[in-house]
Length: 338
Picture 1 (cartoon, rainbow, N blue to C red):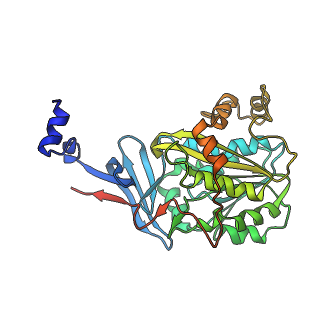
Picture 2: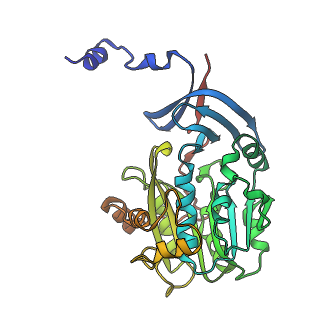
Picture 3: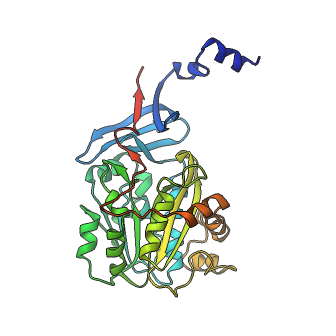
């Protein structure tokens, strides 16, 4: 027998010694599966009006933002997530001037939007002011000075209500950088047909909406990625799903992007043959650290399992019948202090 099988036979805890030193943060991903981070320093731990908020410094990923026990982003690879959320949608629009961000408390989505010099105004509305202020203090690399840009407009409040106040047809791109739809979480209604139908009226001709859509690997895309895709397809005439590997998320991560008009240029391949790279260079974005035309093709090239899951999905997310990735009472992180 191997040492591992021998240890299993005797009931020993294989690898338990790893946790003997230092402080650890354990996040349950699903029943029987968890990820653990060694915590070098706790920078912030508090409770806002909406969620628990923590920032910890870890060995593998640097500083982590954690809300309601779920890791939201890491210092090491946040640029992957934020570049892939923002740039496909903004690059697909020939001249995005008015942009609206729902959520985005770290400030990194705002940072990426304002890299497009054609953007004249970007309104960011996040419901949790404590998250915004805490990130300003403890994780300034997220916003990187974006809040000081005269084109940035920050509002602490309800993103849905803020959008409802906007004139119809007044926004070029809507970016939904929201927490995952959780049972007990603050924003699950912003993944429903009611919300998307309202967004559609606010988009200007040629308008585009993109939303983060949760884990999207072969074994977990059915949780929310494919239902979000199906929900958007019931409201918008064109919808494309795409994914990217974010190492700290422990899964392929999903996004869905839609256009207001049925005859608009494809976000997936409408700027192929070097046109996407040319547009990025025109906007001074030819040297982004992650996103370019080759990366774009990889992101939109879904594997067969996920493609077929999107094709076969029948669930539509409504206010009356929402879907949740998990519950905030069962999917939580735990600090192990020594």
